[in-house]
Structures are given as C-alpha cells and as structure tokens.
Length: 355
Ligand code: ADP
Ligand code: ZN
Image 1 (cartoon, helix red, strand yellow):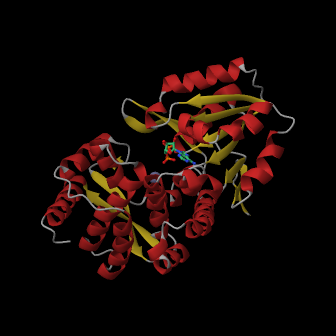
Image 2 (spheres, protein in one colour; image 1 turned 180 degrees about the vertical axis):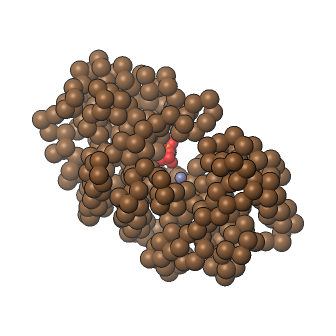
C-alpha cells in the first residue's frame, strides 16, 4: 500500500493505493460520521455486502443507473435531493464508489451541496483508478456535450484498491489501458515498464504495479497545474481526436477512443516531423495489442465537426498534444482543415492496409 500526497495552493488530497487500501482505511473514514454514498447499479449488485456492512451503517446509500447516460442534471438533482433528505451536514462525508461516471457526478454533487462537503473517491474501474479519480475534475454532460458542466473539487482521500479489478469485464480493463498507454507517452519510466511488460499488459500483477506509477505521474502534473492552464494539458494526449470520434461514432468507450485518437495523432506527429517513426512504432505496437484501429470512413467529417464545435478551438487552429520523444510530449498547432485532411489520409491508408 502506498500513499501519494497532492498538495496545491488550494487543497490537500491524498491517494492511497494498493492491496488492502479499502479494508484498512474505509471503516475508519466512515466511523463517527454521517456519510452519504453514491454508487451505480452494477457496482451495488456485485459489492452489496460492502455497502450493507460498511457504508449503510453510517448513512444513506444512493444507487444510480450504470453508464454514461446517468451523467445528467436529473440524476444530479436526484443525488442532491437524497443528500438533503438524509440530513447531510457540512461536516458529513460523501463517498463515490464506482467508475468514472459515479466519481464525476458524485464529486460534482459533493462540491455543490452546502457549497462543498468532504469527499472520498473510491474508484472501482481501472480507468478511474489511474485517471479520473485523481485531480479533482467533476462533471455532467449537457446537450450531448461531455463534461461541459462541472467543477474542480479535490477529494480529501482517494482509495484505489485493486481488489475491485477482479470483477471488471475485459473490455473495461482495455479501457483503463488506454489511459495507461497514454501516460506511457508522457513519462519515460512508465514507457519503459510498458515496453518491458508488453506481453502481459492485462495481467493483474502488472496492473497493480502500474496503477501507482500512473497515479504518481498524474499527481505530479496536478500539483504543478491544478486548473489546466499548461502542463495538465499534456494529459489530453490522444483526446482531441479521440473525443471527435467518440462524439461521432459513440459505440466504443472512452479509453478505447483515447487509443484510437493516439494512433491517428501519432500518424500526424510523424507526418509533421515531430515524432521519429521508430518511437511512434513502439507506441503503436502497444496500442495494437489492445485494440484494432478502425479505418473510419467519416474520419475527416468527425474531426471537422468536433473542431468547429468544441472548446479546444483557437481561432482556426487546433491544438494537439503529441508524443515527440520518450517522456516528452509537445504541443502541435495545425489549421483545422489541414488537421482533418491528415486524419482522412491516415484513415485511407488504414483502409488500404498500408499501415
Ligand atoms: P469508467 O470507465 O469511466 O470508469 P463507468 O463508470 O461507466 O466508466 O464504469 C464502466 C462500467 O464498469 C460500468 O458499467 C460500471 O457499472 C462497471 N463497473 C464499475 N466498477 C466495476 C467493478 N469493480 N466490477 C465490475 N464492473 C464495474
Ligand atoms: Zn481520458
């Protein structure tokens, strides 16, 4: 079990990760307090005894339907009303027990209720353990735009316990690997570990080890740039194109789209001379172990729509964070039409099996 401290100008937060993190910390965090626990229907069904034996003894347990569709204002309102009727006070603690969806919406509710109550994140998916539970971003979606309404609100404690991963479907593991491989493009030590263990990326033992590394990397970035004015943008590597495809094609999950986005953006980085082909190939090799890259017929249209619609447009330019050298991402700015046409070129090459 290891602890990562995140102390910034405005808050202090700690992430406790590793085996035993849940059992050794959660009962004490619930003791002598009024708590309010949010989880989703799947996690509740699988881990019912944990809720009955621990969380329900110190307060209410509120279950929301599983899936991204729950990240909306009526589910948020339902949580806030339940907080009120359970008698939650300023010094009470909200526990978010689940994947990124629960973490995002329960975190937002905790930041709003009485202008903010204590928050403990208990991420139960690989993706939320390595990425979304750390850093204090909370959100719901609105009018089809992901994460457009939200706050920065640091949890006091994050408990990332790998025991939850044993029940995770293989596809959810791949999703988490999307963010892990992304972190490998930002951090030399993680890159080396991924290369050394590329045959066993999905093994439980390997994952236990790399979760801490990814959390420590993210914590370091968040300490230096809590509000995403600079360095934190590096964490968006693969996400510009990934989000564009996510909006347009929908069917896959976030982590899978991050990998696909990274692949297309690596093509751009090589094409623009920022990334050496050998380095790009070594990352592509990792990506292809997890997912087959689709040759999207509407790739250009999807990217144009997202670029002109979304918040990352700077005039007519798009900003991408791309891998340049090992452990060294770089920002690349391209005119939107040029960006979209290179994406189309990549899709065409994929279609003809030339990549
Ligand atoms: P994210 O991938 O962002 O963490 P979700 O919160 O939607 O996204 O979680 C993905 C799916 O995994 C959801 O259906 C959720 O109910 C389910 N889930 C979360 N934790 C576990 C777990 N430990 N075991 C099995 N399924 C889980
Ligand atoms: Zn992401």
